[in-house]
Length: 448
Image (cartoon, rainbow, N blue to C red; front, top):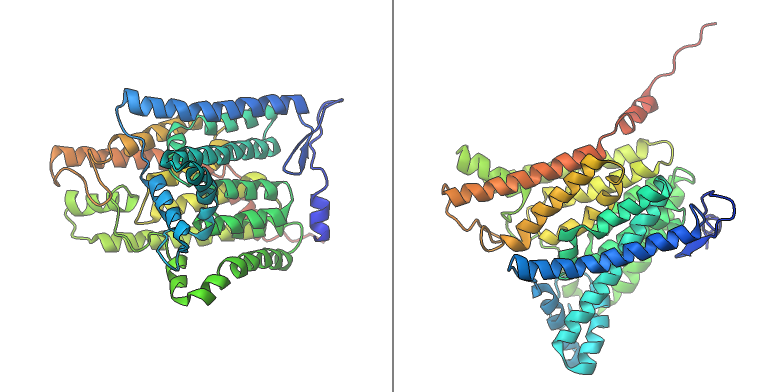
């Protein structure tokens, strides 16, 4: 352990009232506002997180008469079953996710094997995802303690815990697991335990790729008090260890499967109709008849994504001092770009950025209202109107019909709400832009 991390592992505290009882979470010690208040907040947040899952399931099935999508979970069970015959994923049969996704799958598979009951796997996997979601909500809360007072930090956690669209996907998909790794990585980074942060983001990469988007921003954030070279070496070593442990054995046993493993991200699919890319294409092609292909629209969107990500890295580099909110906004914007500009889209991607979004809107009622409105749109998108108004590859109604226009209007409004919410959440308000101007400002000449 480096000297820097030994210092970072010392109790991280915030000065509070006299006589406060400290509280420790994952090696980080808090004493503000006091241990009892933190324990009460944690209990309420855990309760809200669990209750919301039952509420969403019951409302979906009984009030809206929609479905609880277990397609992915059944796929996870199918991917684990060949292990009983001695077969290995990637080598003997395909598996469409990075290898660490097998951690919750294998844990849920144990009770299924012991009971020979597939429903035991479903319930176990859902329970594991709820545990991951509890860790996410606690990460939101403890990060909030660093940038807000205790009350606002609690609101941030509560906003995430009651994000009902996200709650639906927690109990039907695996995305809570990599998102948990991402949020723990951000939590450790915010509190100065950089090596654990790099471990979390690197592990997240091998769980579902996207958490690695935080790594450049973590390196640049940590480098404000050390050096860029030191942080690059530290992050690189940890990431390399993961590669050696997880990829090298696979490359030795079956080199041909390595490319399948690395590129199992959905990039080979066509343009999904619930993307911003297709929504723009529908206007330029079907509404305004400009004759622009969907491929060209997609290419432009990817160029914009690359340009924005480079700009975000540049802003992180130009920022002279550590600023927690700026760091969180940069990571949020980067993850949102991955979701917004790509040509393929699964509704559960909302889990990826909702924790940071919930945290950053917690101090403003207008943004909180827009946050829940975005959750309404996401919940309507899936499961309520899936296969009724659209499938992955097409609108259900023919182009030019009233149903087609209503579907286009829905996705248009959904993305308008999201863009507005992101703008209000990320707008500099004299922060990033002002600091960039100060960074490049030529100092005035002194009069002799």
